[in-house]
Amino acid sequence: MERHVPLVWRHLSVVRLLDGTEAGPPWARLLTGLFQDIYPPSIVDRIVDVFLSEGYKTIVRFALAHVLLRQDDIKAARTWNALGEAIVRPVDPEDAVPFRRRLFRTAFHGLHFSRQIIHHSRTKHRKLSVEDFDDQDRALILQQAVHAPHLVCQSAIVTEGAVWETIWAWLPGRFRVLRADLIFATREHGHHLSTLFLRAGLREPLLLIVETVCGQRVGAYLSRSFVRRWKERIYGTGETFLFALPPVGSSVGGEMYAWTGNNDAFIMANEGYVAIGCSESAFGLWIDRDLERVSSQACATFGNPGLFEGGGEGVVKALELWTFIA
Image (cartoon, rainbow, N blue to C red; front, side, top):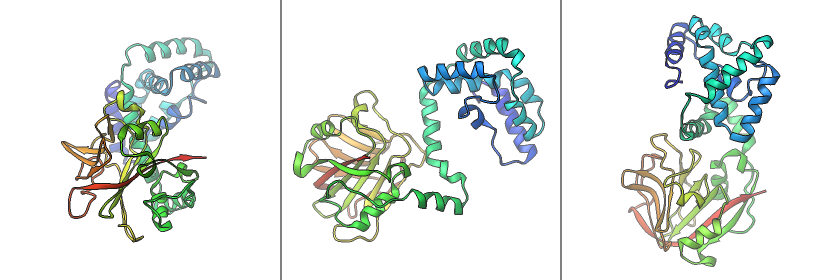
């Protein structure tokens, strides 16, 4: 909006300030309603066809084009309600054919933006979506989403049920109803990163847990698979997080560090190392190619301190990689 329809963008800010409203514009009607009740069925059907072949970016194109075509009416609105009505006012069916021509011409000529912009916005929204509810509603939503951990096999690192319950509570709600399956363990598959990549394959999300020879346990939830390591130097979404578990033998404690929004350095993986979170040259969690050395430092991505007590690194005793299955 700020880039492609700057006059409307500024007008939205002015109306919000003068009207004193905390409500947001009716973007959901455009971005998730596929323009139903706004466009005649013939236009909606055509948009759906393009969406099915080209993906979500298409919806953003049409939403921006819609605002561009309605910008005169939007700028004429002086209250928040009038502004919303101008955005979602239905198109006259008699004007459907010429409007469709203007809409498609505007959507696919002159509106240039990268998918990365959409990806960043959706990632941030996914992290913050629950925060739109008040405390009571949020507690109810989270309570409904929590399910008891169900492991396909036993872990050699996390043997306490209470610790698994803590990990489970940190997971995105849609994965808590699934089972955790162990797909890589150093005790069975050896100490080499290439084997871990091979065992992980296309699976996502992933849960990485590391135990050091000193009995400290740390890990990360990886929202994306490792296959992207050759195509994208840095990848992942805002659901990725780091965590520190209580020492071996204790079920008390543990801390999860969620995305701060400061940068998008979620996952970095290549033939030499795996790293999660970054702040200049410091990694939130770093593991070498031989799965022998692990280190952790404070990083901006997750706002975490070093995960290890008494030092920034340790020697790997065991490492496990889990995925989620129905």
